[in-house]
Image (cartoon, rainbow, N blue to C red; front, side, top):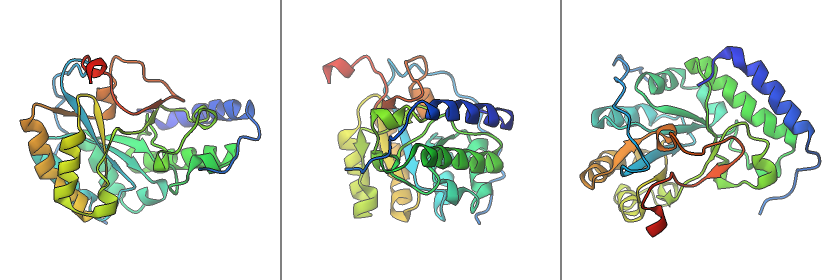
Length: 252
């Protein structure tokens, strides 16, 4: 995670990289804060060997995010939150709580923009404004970004100063709003190294979490953050990742 002292340096680096590319725009295809202390660091897990999965939540924070944090805290399950910058200032205590309880913060652009429709200057603003909002709320900035809609491409990815985190399990929770179906899709499609996509702006998605976490755990999965999932592996800015490395991947 980065402190405020690095924002200007990162911004300058991003501006330099943006200057190398031209004409890249194209058409695309207040909650209560928990008083619980920070979770103690868990023993390191090797996700190249262990059955790790990463729960990820997009588009918040929102009115149901604190309820989700309650559920995750009860289950002792970490998650990664890809937040929309314009929402962060509405729920600063919730964002602080994410950090205090051991979750990872991610950038999801300022207003959920499809980066493949934007100019390089607009991409810079979408990323930087969101970083600044998260830092103001939580005192740190993200190390990962999820492009809205999963929309990306090589020329655009190079403009992002973080790894781009996609997913290999889409619960479609935003579409059907059915907790039972959300759990079923996740369990049917999850594999060691999977990244599971959900949304904390929907109450039905939050309602699915206790059952999903319990069943994943019963199947031998270890829930981790995205950073934990990729620890020790090639995970670099400007590249997109759908799934973490695992020794069984070649045989899937």
